[in-house]
Image (tube, rainbow, N blue to C red; front, side, top):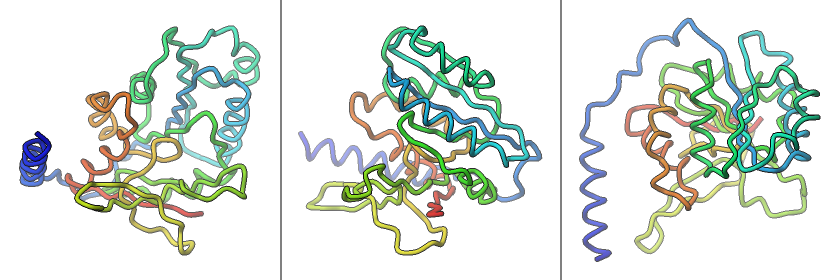
Length: 238
């Protein structure tokens, strides 16, 4: 059964690589702007830090920007004080718990701008995050991943957002690498918790990513599909 499934996957992957690649030459469209989309489930305390960091990172951005919070599986009453403290954010409430990609899709349906920064509610952006990332956009770019540091700096850094795909004993695995320097570098995929994405492609990829539920593989799939279409994924360590 597994050998049969592997042959089917290899065939589908080969056919995908033979499909016409999208034209990625030319300049960015004149329209700019970034939507920060934050999936959130019943974690107002950490969300408070997250929103404060997002607002701080937004202050130096000269182009249109919005913040959307997708609260799912939690009561709107728990967020009343945060909504008062952050009146410019857009709040989307869903009574039932959603998977990661379903929450992202709800945010994407309301996002207005051509670039999406996906931000986990337990992540805090540095003040210059967007100022570092936005200038890296180009016609052939799908994603830019931010470097992730744990709040507990004594922990081993098993998640950095600099990713690599490896083949180990015949199985595909993904690992995060420790950055070796400060320069922008290619990465296999951008993690969905702290990265900038081209909205048009993200909407296209995220529509059918729920096939991985309940496993967390969506962002790996997004990066791989973008690469097949001729787009790049880069990592910005600063």
